[in-house]
Length: 212
Ligand SMILES: C[S@@+](CC[C@H](N)C(=O)[O-])C[C@H]1O[C@@H](n2cnc3c(N)ncnc32)[C@H](O)[C@@H]1O
Image (tube, rainbow, N blue to C red; front, side, top):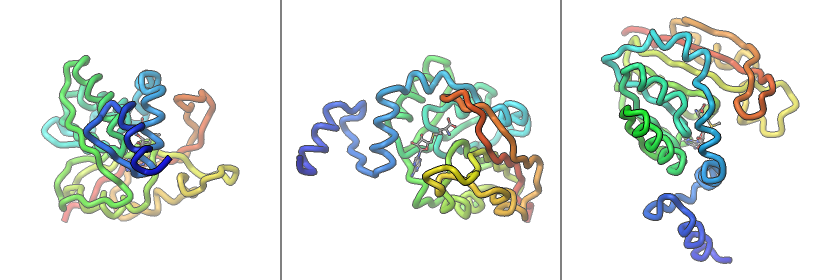
């Protein structure tokens, strides 16, 4: 099968016939969400986010980076906070928008590649990064947050046995990367995996960008 055949056959199955995103991450995640997106939407918002959501300003704008089907973005929107959900997967974002309509909340969405991020400086009040790691985004998050803005970050920590170590934080890495921020919450702990039900080792961080 040549490239043209491949894109047209993918296109026939796509929820988005007008978009042909061939980025490998998009192909992988679009496939996952096409096969079990409804199941993934039944996941719960991060417990850390639920505990600290009161820190988000109702007048602010929150970016959910790598939002997927939006369990966290939708939870924040339900608290009356404006959310923009970014993801490489247009299928995930489509499911997110459908669910937002069912819940009667508004969430803006955009297809966005976090391996090549650019955000205007000082433009958002908070950034959520859950169950996703792209180190190239760290500097972009710093730039995008307004002074005093909040970073909510939770993802998996490498304990030595995982095959794809680049998807995992090293122990202590997250805290060190944002050590110049005001740390509100920082922990490395076990949380129950949404799909597997197994305990997973994660790093959690809530940190405030310094005021100028
Ligand atoms: C494990 S899911 C996490 C989704 C959501 N944050 C959550 O916690 O439920 C990882 C997400 O990262 C997105 N992703 C993968 N590579 C990406 C990239 N290069 N740019 C933006 N998003 C990406 C996937 O499409 C997927 O939705």
